[in-house]
Image 1: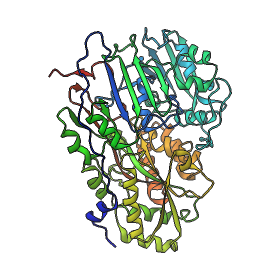
Image 2: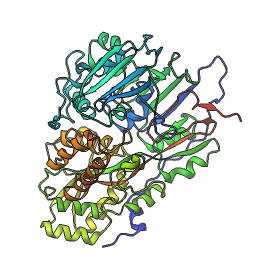
Image 3: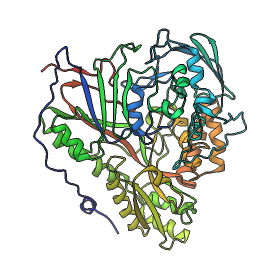
Image 4: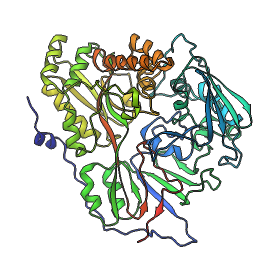
Length: 551
């Protein structure tokens, strides 16, 4: 059975409600008025907190870097290279130690100056690791996490699921040693060529030690953390709105805008209507089939493109049918990824070379590709596996990812075309996605590269303490052993060979997931604001990126 383009389009048709007449907000406020940017976002957080270690999500990446900054910065509007930020400079002391010189005069939102003590505290057991231990050359041990029912912690001790993420990001961090007021050393238990990259990713942020301890409760602190970012929390109503106000003493220069208001507006029609009516200045997660609607309004424009994230589909190999890797590989061969890119994204993103990104540079495995679209091969594999029409559940959220429901329907039809009995189960939240009270099978997910090395995506998301293994969805002994090699070897040839082997395991021999396409993030925005979008997901409203264009 072949599915043509027209049949695919017919699977899902969505109509936007009647558009409102534009009533544009004043784009040039007087000197006595606050300049406020209003953003209609599909979501603000998943877990209702503003703690980066708890909110390792796409929606969180969009907002949280405005509040909390990692030790080493990334040129998110440029070439994505590492650059000085709250760390003025850094140098290698050995294969396992990096020394960081902090920028003097960096001020927290509460007025305190950031010092080495704050940095060390930010990477302490109390904040990041709990009672977990670093692996010291014996391989990381998987820390089980209750993704659907987090355990409430006591006092200011970080919850267990936060510690699990901490060890995901830093499996072997032994100590952060204070050398002097503005110098620290990050001391790893084993060699690690990616220490600098780790220091640049979301979750490796510096917080105010005094504010954290005075909060008295981790959850109270996580609702409004104090960091060094360009904006500070003014008001946070979980899953409704987040109001950020300018940090006047920001080390990089105070932003041009006084406040940024993020509103959670899950419905696409409401986000677009609000843009057309002048209620919002930006709207996130706009599909390409709305380009004409947005650009048909003189005051709006459509911007965005591919970002450092891949849309993937995860397999739970504990499901009786999916225990056989041939069934999982058949599911991958049955999907025409290029058709999805062309239909849903107007060709504005790409089908990548498996779970890797071009900015890996010399670590990119050029001759690796995701399983090709081959429905005949899929049928052959299903026959070899003895598949006999058993139901495979596919849990789907209502467009947490842009176009998620449409993509799920398209893929389900492709799977049915090769004889797979797919049951789409619509769920309301991530807790229901992860719930084990009934058999899990397939789910949507995405994978971000936090820095320019495969450790940041393949190991940190799928390795011994990646989410898939922490929630008991997938594991592979050889893959886990090679994860340690990729993380700890200082021989680049060995690392690249290891990476290639890990891709082969995770995408062909014992599939953990299938890569669908590189994620693209598109926005509707006002034309009169000179704003550059970032391929890191972050909506950057720092000084210099919110200039009003004269009419």
